[in-house]
Image 1 (cartoon, rainbow, N blue to C red):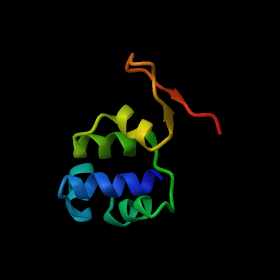
Image 2: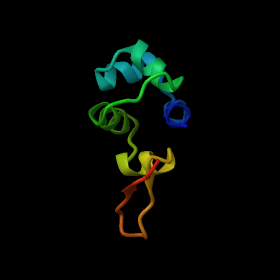
Image 3: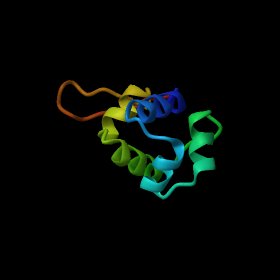
Image 4: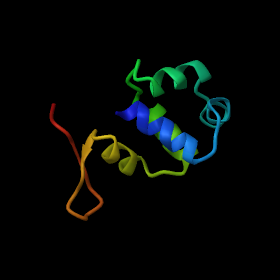
Length: 81
């Protein structure tokens, strides 16, 4: 689900993989693999992607189902698996 969300956010920002790669300093090939769900990105990579897309990291993680949304307090908890 995270990969599909990353792709949707990138496309909504009207960025190619190459442009996102240049903004994040993450390889084009690795970003493609993330979008296809082949790898789990590190927090530092997620921060770079969120920043490049202009999306708050917490919001991105909540929408991807990685964090549980807070009760309007801007806080979230890691979702238990």
